[in-house]
Image 1 (cartoon, rainbow, N blue to C red):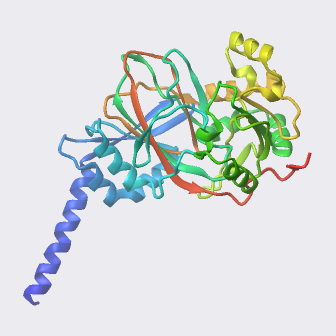
Image 2 (image 1 turned 180 degrees about the vertical axis):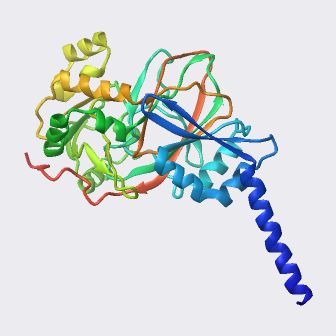
Image 3 (image 1 turned 90 degrees about the vertical axis):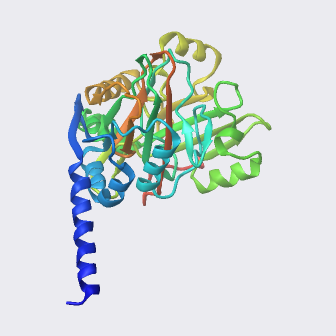
Length: 354
């Protein structure tokens, strides 16, 4: 055996030892609440290089994402941009811009945004990010820069369990009829169309809507209305599982606090609300059905407090997220990507001419 052969064998042996050592330095456990479980990764000591471990053990993380829908990295000291951006780069190919956005966020650069900037006393209901677009992110990642003193959790819900919790008769109706999202821009109660579509050119909005199976009405330079019909149930492209993937309850008027709902309905017709959902044929969905859907979410939801430096990677088709009210400073950042376009992008019964 030559000196070169010996050196090569020693190099391979050292690589194996390094891999085993790094793997053994990661502690694995579960977080569980309701019907949702997440994989929890923690370092055995403070010197663990998370990004190096990810580069060698990405198949394990991907398998955990498919099984659990989400993984939590806790205790790695990631309270700034560097570690979070490293995590995003290692786990999310093709960072995705926030197209058709519906909530206020601040872009921090390199595909990183603040979480939704709603007032601290408001709840954000469970939802899968951008379920209503034709090209949604398969992965979404959060990081906690500042943990709130009280509340402010990001509840997480396995939407496989939500689908299983629903009345089969209701599921069948949505399978046949789909759901419609109606948005009105320019009333001062949501983002402008310029913000939502990332353009100042209405012709670009026309082209985008035509390509995305969205019916567009233009009233003037500021006021437009969009309607889009989507399936309520999707099939995961890797696991082939069926999931409850939509914003049906999220934007239904009955999900609003009653004083807010009554105030909006006193001012706007149903199809003139900033956001509204209905059956795919345009008929209004009964409030009782929405209450049933919201109960199915609650039954499946995990709520756990943020800890400083926590980073959470989710399969966006398997896990829905939201936000609880909070007190004190709270800073959560987010990135999303790995865009996916399904074969069945729009609901098959959708007729934009009606």
